[in-house]
Image (cartoon, rainbow, N blue to C red; front, side, top):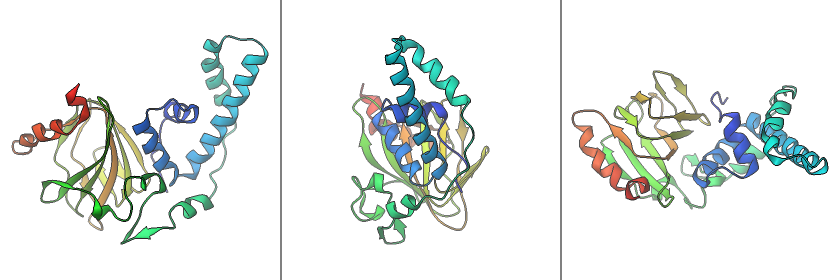
Length: 231
C-alpha cells in the first residue's frame, strides 16, 4: 500500500497539464502504483472541466477560477480507494526480476541493467535518464540491500519515487510507489532495508550536496552532470 502521495497542488497542476515535464513523469509513474491518486486525478479533471465551462458561461474572470476550484474540491465527499486493474495491465511486461513502469519504457527498453550507471560508492550508483536544459534532472538511484546513501543536503527541490525495495530516514519508511518531496531544509541519510536493493526515480531541480568528509569530494562530479549547474 502506498502511504506517501503528491500534494493536491501537484496533482492539480498535473491534471491541468501545467506541471513541468520532469515532474509529470514522476507523477505518472506514481499513478501506476496508486489507485487513490488515480481517483483524485479523475475527480480533478471532471471538476476543473465543470468550473471552466461554468466560468465561460457566466463570463466570470478566469483569475477567480483557481479559488473556486479549491473551494469546490474541499466540498467533494471522500471516496474509498478501489483496486486498479489497469495497474496490473501496465506492469505486465517484466524483464529480469523487475517490471519496468510503463512511463519509463521510453528510457529503458528491457532492463535497469542496460543503463549507464555511474558508481559513486561500492553500494550506491546513479543513472541519468533525462536532463531538462537549464532545469531539472531525472535519474535513477540504486543502493544495495542494507546499505545507505551518503548523508546529504539539497540545494533545491527533490522528488523521490520508490520503484523497487524500500528505504528509511529520520522521517519514515518508504516503500514501492511512495512519493517523497524534499527541499533545501532537509539533511538526511537514507538507509535501505536488509531484504532487497532499492531503486528510486528522482527529480532534482538542483544538485544534492554530500556532507561527509570523503563523500563531499563527489560534489563537483554531481554538479558537473546536473543541467542546473550550466545555466
